[in-house]
Image 1 (cartoon, rainbow, N blue to C red):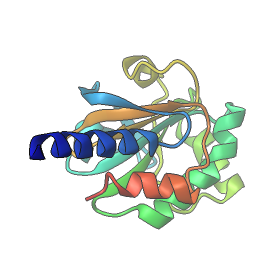
Image 2: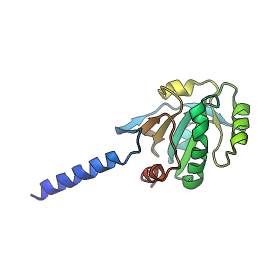
Image 3: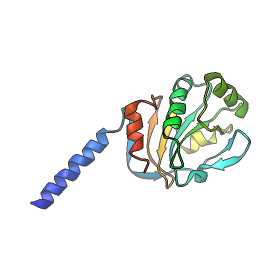
Image 4: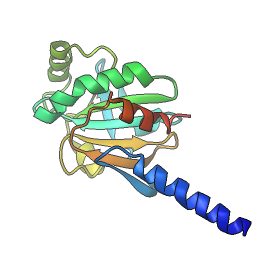
Length: 170
């Protein structure tokens, strides 16, 4: 009898967790490996995904010419301000062919203050990460595995989204 109660409690808890994902956010049944894509910072430092091991990441693939990307960027900046720490980072990875100068102009134009600049002007990261449109955002655990993704824009500083993401930062 206790086994049945435990199984029911686990089932109810699992289904509640599945529903807790904000609309459009697709969580995987199991964590998935991701490509170790390479990119540069504003000062030209070369990094890759392994550089972030030990942190939960919200990896947003975007471009300055993508209108929905431009619209959601202030909410990503606000999310980084709210949750950014040694345990979590919003990694806004631009795939602009024009490189760092185009991204710097855009960040200055809209007042981005909390996001670090990451740029892959080769655009190879978009293919390696199997993006089907921009923006595409991946939730990555501290082991560097993809937990889920959202294709399209979102309001990343929305309280429901913040609460959802806080559940993965521990």
